[in-house]
Length: 438
Image 1 (cartoon, one colour):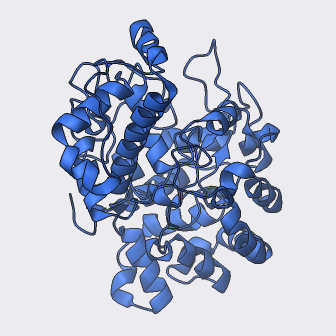
Image 2: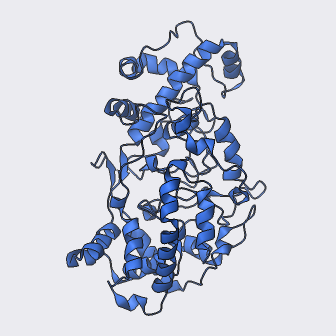
Image 3: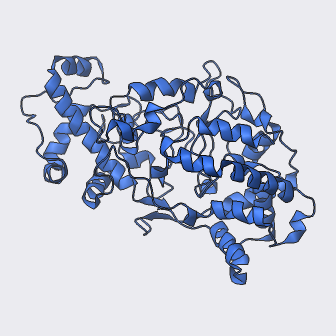
């Protein structure tokens, strides 16, 4: 196993505020994973039933949802934890007027009645996009957003689709007018007086069509900044709402709690195949290398040789997104951020020369993964068994280099694949809004 090499690479993109504590635990974590891989890979392990070594128990404990802890506050969004902002954000999230055709809301693709995604290979707003819709639960634990990490905050992420021609297809001045018309009191109670928009055109924005861009260019700089601030505050309200959305416990959480606390009743939460899948997950299958922690993701970017959606133009993934996030007017260091420069460590110390980011995409959470096919960043793989077979094959990447080839993958038998699929289904649990099902 090349666990330390993977650990060192993840450090290059790890949020700086977490680095010191991570360094202290790095050697111990690597040793625990190495021991867990070795012990869980032994042929007799499946016969051990509910017996786990101390190293394996430590890894299992790290996977429990209860290990997540409180989210690190987003210094760039002063209303991130505001209930009033969350209430406004929920209204905006579900309002189709905030789109070019009046038919698309955030909830169109991030459907609350599902997994806050749409079940499509690629999102469908005003038109079909190029990426799969990502769920929005427990995103405050992340430092980078979208499949390629081109945004560095939850509120900046919320703004991207609003001006994207294929998603909402609108423009920021139109949105400012709508906020003033329909949500002025709620907005001003949070952010203060709105600017005077009465003499401004109905539509203008830096990313709209030709006439909208021309109208935006005709505005003076102070007016542009005032409209952009309203737009930014709209994103901050939506982020406050999204921050209330969380995964609930799964049967795997209950089983792990039974193992750690010696609760016989909870040991029955998983079937024999699901327990065998859990041993594969932390052992021979090496899944926990990237799908680690209580959200079953390392929040980082990896090239795993997924075939490109468009073979004529393979995407560069994270490598292309780094310049985008650094130049984003809505990033942590930008004029609309509430953070001080020293609070923007992730952006200030971003690793922008790592060759392993070519063709790399973000590790998704595996919580509720069985409830949201298809898979990968553009829905390239339809089923979980196909995903596992891809990882076992470890093909070379169309662009960049697949990290799977460094993991020295083991052949998985059809029975082992089914055991892992059984476990992945057992990661399913409720979606919660402030502790209550939405």
